[in-house]
Image (cartoon, rainbow, N blue to C red; front, side, top):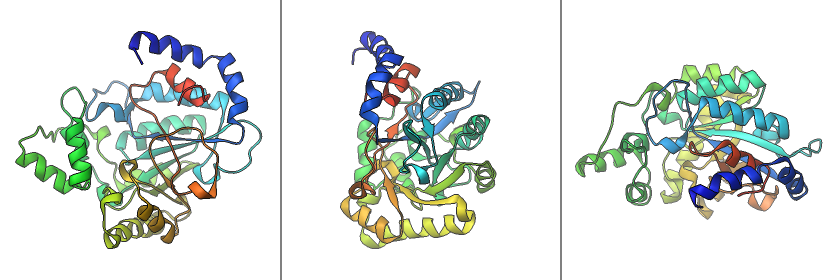
Length: 301
């Protein structure tokens, strides 16, 4: 969409009139939002920019959700509700800024959210896509494709290849754009409504793995999160990079997960046939508030 047309169109489609027109179409549907990092107020941008929503914009988005929909825990997303559209908030990767500033904004509004965690990457880890992002924060699509498909999204393999290829690799990533620590994750789940789910063990592209490695990624993460967080662990998996396959979905069901989440998509109807390929609306750092509203009311996909 041309930038000169995008903003006024999004504003029109996010109006109260558009919301009223779309509300009937949303009856019985559900929306799961997918976030990654939160850029704290006053902090300089870093990493892959589209993955980081500013703290101010996140707060404005939460205020809009609180006024217009029922924000519910992911575990309750398919319950009948009281008539208003039902929305669940999720975060991938357990970035420190999300665990701290993000949770602070959620707690101020008493809103629930689920953080999907790759346990092997906790503790101040810099994810390869943030390390390889150039100064403008736009990761080259050819680099991304090679990393995900040829190298299976495996952090160590991607970094080794990047160094051999003499690509830009930054190790100067600010704390908010690194993964949180176990202590920070434990503090986050002390907040009512905050839960954790599985993002695999090491954030590999699960669709690229053989059966043995796939099962290990799913079961090791599940067992660790259950042991660490008890009833704060929800038995859902968010596929790393949003990539899955028939084999991935079957392995997730066999590992006793109750649902699997992709990245991409929007409002959808709960259906046992799609329990392990549930869509999520990815909230990008460059999405305007009008664009966010238009998507929440169902006027834009």
